[in-house]
Length: 467
Image (cartoon, rainbow, N blue to C red; front, top):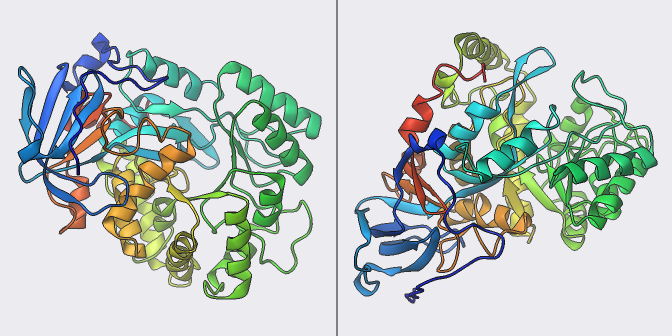
């Protein structure tokens, strides 16, 4: 790697030195204008193999230089942090996250305050909220983080779900294409930067929403059912959630604009041959239409018998932790669960899509029956991608640069390179030899400000579920 020394670089639209308000200073351990991270093992987010004994220079919130320690001089007066034996990777850019969590049957509690701290503690420096059931929390949290009054990742804020008639008490039903257009414009005017369609939307409403959002330069994703992936691709959708696990393209009894039911879709995906022509034809269409897929293995792992207990449960309030543990015990006994087949098949389909040239991004989706804990689950995502057959550098690229490029932020974040924003994760270990070391996050740099993982987690531990 060629060392590039830059005295002062700027990235349009990104503050070089973010404000550090009094409310977040308690979590900050590094706040100097020039910092030298020396002798690190670097996984740079591009998919390239890890490089040893590297030095990365941070200046005014940006990466001023990066290269071999022997040829990358440390500026005079810099704060030097020796990372010998440690690993440096880009801050994660995750695109299916939420600021809510299941607190009861069909009810989601708004946990923005604790969740943004946990995401940051886990190494997430940029995130898209994949739909919200509150309205303004995501938008307001985004603004407060930008102002330096709250500790958390940069947020791409998704508006409330775009859906048809449904059973969710916290979700509105659209009344037709004109209403879909009004909904898009209202939330775009309020500051939403992303839209998500949901399972009961019609093709007409989805098409209208996509058209209106694209006029505003905003992308649309979807967790679909009533609309097939092929239909959505033809309508111009940008992104599809849960990779192929929400696809109903292969249900033989599928009726137009009608969701055939989750179980029917799952059965067809569980039986799908990743080497068969039906699957390959859909993959070709998605790639041709430039549709990105979001894989969310952590939420589906919690439905699958025989899988390990998810990490991070200790941060929950006791009732929520016990609620999940009881559900986990029931899942473990369900030997007939379709997820025993579906979960490993989903991993194969993710890999096949990527190997065919499709763009895969990732998120964790802390919904379902609980147990998907922000930050902890983001680290687990890397482990599961490696289990699926991706190399570690490929997995890191999926959770960093791929997400950044999808969000239109690839020039600024998502990889370690001179001129980019100093969003970095320090890992106290070597995940290239022990993948579990991805959980050993020590410090998270966001725009050159170093946040202490332990302090962030301690500030919410045992209280997640209250706020």
